[in-house]
Length: 165
Image 1 (tube, rainbow, N blue to C red):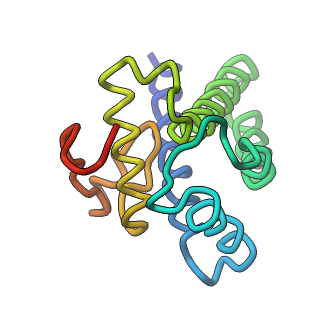
Image 2 (image 1 turned 120 degrees about the horizontal axis):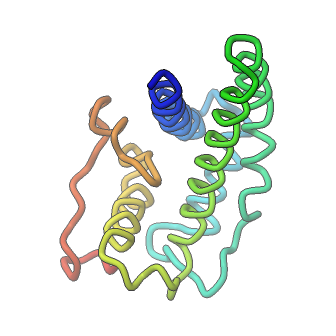
């Protein structure tokens, strides 16, 4: 039971961290991180040009470098505080969740992604599109729970209501 609680807390922590980092990337005081992220928003995928045949960006390589120091600190804390088997499971879970978040983000910008056949995916893509049209909203990628909590969630137009899936 304790292991399940720890793994659940790990998912919540990864989601909160991803939300926080994405918000940070929209703050001018983040300097070069802000500049790099705004290139994604304003040059690679501006509001009128949300998708392409292949992903135009670095494909998450820069994101991995951004998260690495935090991931190493979290892993060190986990192995210090928990039994090795549980710390290893938590680290694997958090790495997998981060990787999934990154891959999902990139896929939203691919015009005819195979996941587009599923309604849940099209809804997430529309929520991310809203973020590109109004950058102060919908910072989540796979989960928009923190957007709800913090008040940055913006309603998603239904399919065909001005924002194509």
